[in-house]
Length: 492
Image (cartoon, rainbow, N blue to C red; front, top):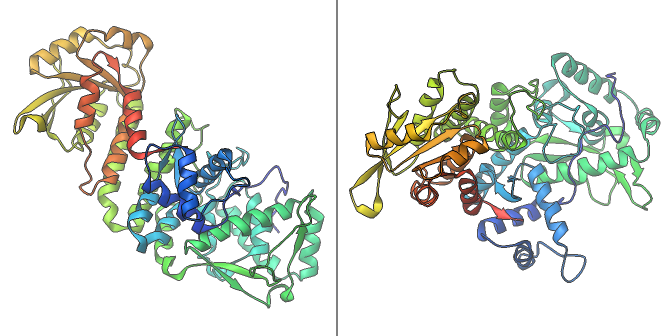
């Protein structure tokens, strides 16, 4: 049987604060109903829905924060640098297409990995946990099902996955199923250090499985023939509570989870496109610049790619996300002459609704890109904007005077310089010039939320123009981020 280190400090950790899918749905609905309010007002709204009861008459704001953290774990959204909760595309979809809730939750499950930004699972775990679970639930050799006890015995202790480990796991599950209940119970008791499996059963059955069952991804099935209709029971710490593998509340009936049959085709399509044997991205990857970039890749880019597999209509959204991801990548790793980055910016600025035309000019003595923008305040009139691309190696070589001459040459209003990062000295050099600088990833985040939230898949440039016009000669990155947070986030 597969060799695994079973230890309470060395296992997958599933967040456990909300165990009800209905409660999570209430939180999601409240997010859609309210904007620019604080946690106290969120509490009031949840009380109106009978979805929040604090331990005191006033409730606890820290509890609210923990519950939003759990929503982050289950991929409903993430927290920005300023603590703003930014809903994912699946959350947006669940609010606007009630018939597809379980397919969106399938994407959430498929996205869960370790390391995870909102789990204290040790960093030495590098595994697509959601992908593995779904592969097992489509595995013919084990009947496309996972019994609760074997889920707890094997899965939380897998640190990584490849073809060899997977085959060993399948053989071990089949071998485990041949054991008697007494033999299995002995295995658990021999490995049960300070309530290890009480905690495992608690997290897996009462939270993880319950949530995905509530959203129609899992089905929980009784099987009285399993383990001779006996269940395991483990005392939870110093409490009088025992955690079991029973699939029926307040009874002792063993059973298993299986995938909702309506999701089998979508799951197979996801697994055909994205392997469970891949190594997840993490902060120790050399190409990941920051935690912010890592989180946005997990919650924005990868999520849209999964949705594009599930929903064929998401091809347009996938193209948008891929264009934005290509742009941010080229800003850091593009060709030394910057041409790659320049070319990647053209389709990005074409995502703005008011931008009528985007031309790559480039060459010595001129701007990299020239945009023609419609001015809604002037009827059919328009204005021009220069865009200058600075890669990671050249971002510090900004020459405001030269960029100013390019502005005059094209009779443009201003110049936007896009780069992966800027030095403080660069910002100081801009004073007095009709030039702004913005980080590539902040521009990409704004565009992704705009395009994926609007029916025409386009972004608004009017507010961007207002920000730039009112902040010439400065770094407008934080202004872009504040705009994104205010339009699409919730203060928690």
